[in-house]
Image (cartoon, rainbow, N blue to C red):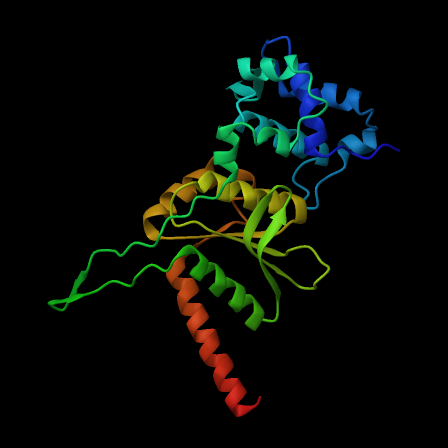
Length: 266
């Protein structure tokens, strides 16, 4: 039995199918992929661990997303796709394969794939009982990331940072056992490319059924929620948007509790 192809192996057949430069619906793309890889009915219907959609449809979607971010194809309307001039140029070069490494020659794809983290910013002072109270300083991205790592360790999880997921990396994951898949996935995004952060969390949700957490700051909560209502609506019920201040507070309380337990020798 031929294994279900991964999204990188799907890219070139997908693009070749669009080589007539006409608009094609997803149903036709899927039919071409099924035929190209000679998938059985069982393989076509095999579901992701999350149970949300078939594995092959998910991989076709990721192939489309990556090629679209590289400018090789475009979404003409919901569920319809067409090759671009750049995509036609790529096919004229007769590449033996199209994968993530190949797509990295296009600056748009590199920009999409490269995390963009903003430095923390102080918020305006608040007037409380006639006194100006300075606001808390927003920690830097890596400081919050490391707090999430330490929270996981204190809670007895197998916690790791910069965890690879295909060609990307998640800021933090927690596992229950070292050899297991991540049960919790975290992205720290204080501004910038929220689409990419949610893309990585969605990928972890699809691939491992991980619980997705987006850690951000108040001004961007609405933006993140809008994306969860739109492009990432499938994981809306499972995703959590967490204010960075709660991470800082939880980290402080757990460290204090851990210190006290050590002193008491519980």
